[in-house]
Amino acid sequence: MFDLEGGGTQVEADDETISESTIQGQRIIFEHLPAYIFEQKLKEDATDNNFRGYYNVVKHISERYRWGNDLFKKLSRNISLVHDSYIEGDEFNRKRCYDLNYWLYDNVYKNLESSNTNDTDYFKDISTKLQGVWKNIVDNEFKDRPYQCYPDKELLLNMGYLQEIKDLFDFYEDYNEMKKEIIADTSGSCRRYVEYLKQRIPVYYTWRDSCKVPEYTCKRYIDDYMKYRPASIVPDLSPWVVLTYPGNKCYATVYDIFVKAKEQPKRNDGIYKKKMEKLEKLNPGKSLLNISMGEGLRGSEFFIPGDHDDYWLRLKWDILLYITDDITPPVLGIVGTLLIFWALYKVRKRIRPNINYDDIKLLYGSEESLNSSTDSYDYNNDYNNDYDNDDYSNSNSSYNLSYASTLDY
Image (cartoon, rainbow, N blue to C red; front, side, top):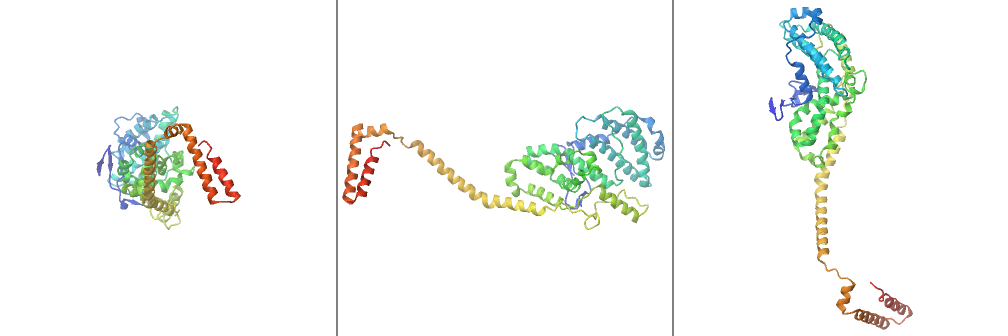
C-alpha cells in the first residue's frame, strides 16, 4: 500500500488480483471520493442507541455475542444517517440505502466469521432478525420522511455478489468527481487512477447490461447507468490527448484495460441466482455465502459472451497509429512548406511598388507622350503584320491589335 497525492491509498492491481471481473484482495480506494466518504461514516463508532427499545426482540444476539450491542448502536445511527443524507433530486439517495444494506450484511458476516466458533451458519437468521428491527424503526420513526430506506430482501445472500454490486455503484457515484479531474489533468489523473481502473472497469462492463432489467438490483438503485459510461469522457478531452495517446504508456495501459474488460463474460442477478440454486442442489446444507459466483462462467451453461468488440477497438487503434506515424509527419511538412511560401508572398506583396496610371503618366512625362508611345506601338505592330502576311485574315488581325491597343488598361 502506498499513499497517493490527494489522500488516496492504493495497492498495485496486477492481473493476478483480478479474476473474471471479481476484485480479489485489497481494494484500491481514494479518500476524497464520495463513495469512500459515506462508507467511512457508516463505519464510525456509535456511543448511543436512539432506538434501544426496538432491540428487545433481538437481545439474545447481544447476550451470545459481545459485538451485538455495538452493532445495534451503529445500525440505529446508520438508519438515521441514510435518511438524514437524503437530498431531493440526488441520483444516489437509493444507492446510499444499498450501502446500508451491504454494511449490515458485511458486518454480520465478518463478526460471525471472527467468532470463536465461526458461526456463519447463523448469518441468515441474525440478518433477518436485524432487518425486522430496521423495518420497524423506519415504519415508526421515519414514516413522514420524503424517502424511506428499507431492508432489501431481494438481494442474493452471497458476499461476492454483494461486493461486486457495491463496487459497481461506488464507481457510478465517484464517476463525476473523477471525470472532472481527468479532464483538468489527463496525464496526472491517468497515473493516479490506472490501478483503480484495473479493478473497476471490468466490473462495469460485465454488470452494466443488468442495469437495463427492472427486476435486477442495478436498475432498482440506479436510474440512468448510461450517464456514467467511462468512454463518454473522451469527447471532453483535449484533442492533443486523443491524437497522442498511442505513444503514451499510461494511456495505452488504460486502453488495454478496456479491451480486456470487454472480453469478460456478462453477469447479472439471474445468472447468479440460477447458479446458486444449482449449487444448493448439488451441495445441500452447504453455505454459499463465500462462494465465488463469478468464477467458472466461461464455458458453462451460465455463460453470456462479453461485448467482443476487441477487433474494432484494435482496428481503431491501428488506424490512429497509421495517422499519427505515417500520415501526420508528411502532412505537417507540406503544410509547413505552404505556410513558408504564403509568408514570402505576403512579404513580397508588401514591399513591391504599387504603380498606378498616374505613376505611368509621370514616367512618360505627360498624357500626350503616353498616347504618342501607344500610337508608335500600334504602327509597329501594323507594319510587322503587313510585312509578314499578305492575306485578308492577317489584315483583320492587324485591325484587332490596333483596336485593342487603344483600350484603357
